[in-house]
Image (cartoon, rainbow, N blue to C red; front, side, top):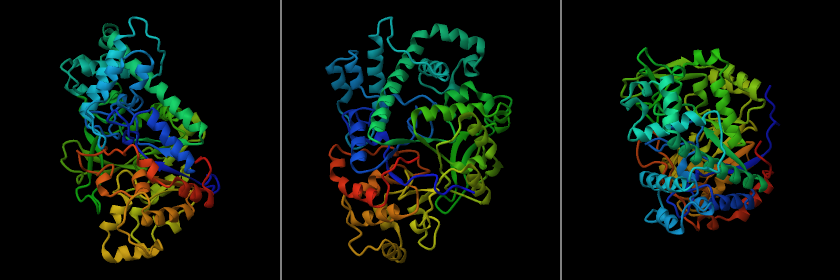
Length: 502
């Protein structure tokens, strides 16, 4: 039987690092991130949940990463390069020039950032003063160097067949020929790791834990698929036979066609799931807790023929189940995991969640305003409660989208008598719901930053099933000062949520 008292009562805020304010067009791992930690600590929040921070591909989605291990270079604070004496004030000013304070312009920022990082690296002369080694780093650095060599094309569009197919003799040769280019990408990862560990230590000193997010799948254009093709479902020519997604539902009549390669679970099982063990170990170096994306895919996953235009033609295929988590636990010990158990959930998925002992997720916006699983009075200590996730609209916008009768029911449930249309950082309807979540039995409550600020739907983080316009919203410099930190400190104290989240 699950231990209902295993997890202490706690709370936190969901804010992607890219969403932070600052002069560089995107949130970075420096001054502004530490200021956000200060706000969390002052308000009594004990965790900061971030979206994946790994290196993204050309679509810039944090759930479609070019590496499952390497950090995203755009998140590196350029001011560190100035502190190291590797760039000038003028060059730093150029990096910050002509960028939006409201949204992330990814292609422009990536170009500016890589230019500045390249300048810094060129000034290390021939004696790099960095030392950084990880099991995944050599393949990642070579892959990025080769990608740059082939005009930033993904591996499956490279003209050299031997490099495309990771011919080991050719790879060995390229490691020598491209040593300088490889060292650049190792230097970039050293910078990222150094800044991340500084931020993590700063957070820890202030009693704030970082909750990370591990996507279940990797991108087709990723170093893992390029270098470990055998771990993915392909035909004899190396073409993918099926891809990932989820079936049609009320929100998406065509389902969702994610397009990520599917795992060869049989082969992964044969070596004791070592790739997954290494992946989780690496995540545990970065985060205190990991939200495991698409948990239901480990029980059964939606397999879609690779030539499909929608997800309608998919089918359920058995996943690794509890054998994977037993192998992880045996190799690592206790697993600090939150299971994202949303979507099409059946008894088998519920049984798997129970067997792992992980906490599942409850999302207020998913409730249908009856005696529903996602309503606060039904939350248990084995749940992590959200007003909404990064895939939902904001809480204020949700009220606007409800039909009239359901909205009346919701306002009665929240015991709210005022004007529900008024937003802003002191938005009373949001405070009513947040207080309901704090009162609930959920061991951990996470509030997206937009809901603390009372923002509308134009600030949502992501719209599932859309390819453009997502992951771009940023908060302003004065935003956090608008939030009544004292009120949330009071809630945390009143409802005994002043504890670490694990």
